[in-house]
Every structure is written in C-alpha cells, then in structure tokens.
Amino acid sequence: MSRFIVTLVSEGRLSQGDAAAASDAIRACGGEPGAANWLDPGDALDLAVGGGDAPGLRAALETALPHVDIIVQPADAPRRKALLIADMDSTMISCECIDELADYAGLKAEVAAVTEAAMRGELDFAEALAARVALLKGLDAAVIDRCRAERVRLTPGATTLVRTMRAAGARTILISGGFTAFAEPVAAEIGFGQVHANVLDIADGRLAGTVATPIVDAAAKERTLRTAGVPLAACLAVGDGANDIPMLQAAGLGIAFHAKPKAAAAADAAVRHGDLTVLLRAQGYARADWQG
Image 1 (cartoon, rainbow, N blue to C red):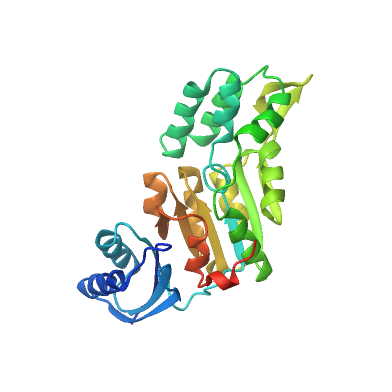
Image 2: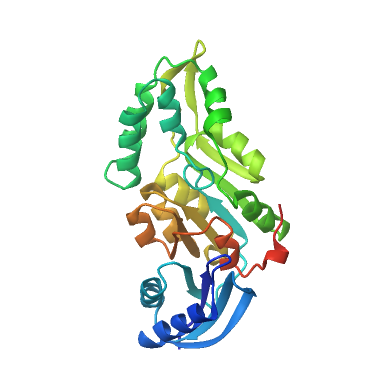
C-alpha cells in the first residue's frame, strides 16, 4: 500500500475543522488518514495517509480546502531535503527584474507582456529573452544598480527558508533565467551557497542588447539539479514559470510558488496562499526550528 505525508498549511488560520475536512476528502478518494500531528497549532499539520495516489489526494484536498496550501509527498522519501534549488524572479524576489529594467527605458508594458507569455510557456524562453534584452540596448548600465535598490524586494520567508535549510546541512542553489547583476546580490543577501544566472553584455557603460552564452534556460536549470551530486529524492525545487517545469519535475519534491498554471499543474505541490516558509512546513520544520 502506498503511504503519504499530507501537510496542510494556513498560518494562524488552520483549525480542527480543516483537519476533519481533509480526512473526509482523503477517505473519499481511497485513502485512510491517520491522526493529525500539529507542527504548530493553528498553523500547520501533518496527516499520515495509507492508500490512494498523490495526484488524486492533492486534487481532492485542494478542492475541499481551497484556502489551505497542500503538500502531498511519499512517506518513504527523505523529509528534510539535502538540496534546495530555487528560481529567483517572482519566487525568491517579488518582481521580474527584466520588466523593471525596461521600465527605466519606458518599455515596461511591452517587455512585461513578453515575459508573461514566456512564463506561461507560450514562447520559447531563449528567443523571448533575446528579444527582450535587445529592446534594452543602449540603456545606461548604472540603471542596474538603481533598479536593484529601488525595485528588488525579497519574497517573505526567503531568508528563513534558506538559512534554516543551510543550518540543517542542506546545500542551496539560486538559479535564474535573469541576470547575475541581480542574482548575485540577492543570493548573498538571502544566504544561498551558489548562484547561476545570465550575464548581461555591457559595452562603454551601456547595455549591449545581448547576453553571454550559453544561457541559463529550462534545460540548464534541470541539468544543474541533476548534476549537483545529491540524490533526486533528497532535492527540493521551487519556481513559478514554465522554464522551471523540468527542474520541478526532476526534483524529489517540486513546489510551484504563486505560479503560472502550467507550472502549478506540473509540480508536486502548488503554494497559492502562504509565503516561502510553506516549504519548511513541507519538510516538517516547526517554527522553533526556523533560522533567520
């Protein structure tokens, strides 16, 4: 019989009634729930489940508890992961850096429309990246630092997630289809151990309208995960866009974070309500264990 751990997260709003509703939904799709194990009362709980299947359990629980973040994972997988690999834009930070750069050139609406289509999986990522960067040709490179200072904000829970996992011995990788000029400072601020991103070409103090190759795309993200030297079952991946899907699917636990529909459907779980500390709840961390 298959066995799963189901984690329910709704910080400050989770009730015994939610636990009962979850148990009813689990039984209705062929599973048998155990007793609720609260990670922190009112915030997050685990239910051990025998029987059923992960996609069916997830669908039933998301329907029964639309206000709760749900994570379903095999009970025999390593709960606390040894590697976190994370997207940056709209995941570890709250914006898309290329869209914000374009705003300084008066082109935000045009560039953001391409970004949105690419993240939905409607455009080839490499082609979309090249087209957007080309529009920024001639922009003063000093705008990068200004944009980072004025527009880039960490997603709530980012620092706590990374520092808690590192304190527990996990490796952490920030990997972005965005740019090193943003990713390296963000990685340093949050506490990531490694960072990979694209390099904006600059000539005579202005953006050249190109990026260095090879680029960090969906294949590069997946390859970085697979070659990290950590068993896939012990890897946690998080992202929000179509270019994160191969990475999310390769990881032992792939979590889509406030994501586009294709990424949310492809991942093992989709965080729709909470912040990045939901990923700690998924690993069984109580609040007393959090760092940062």
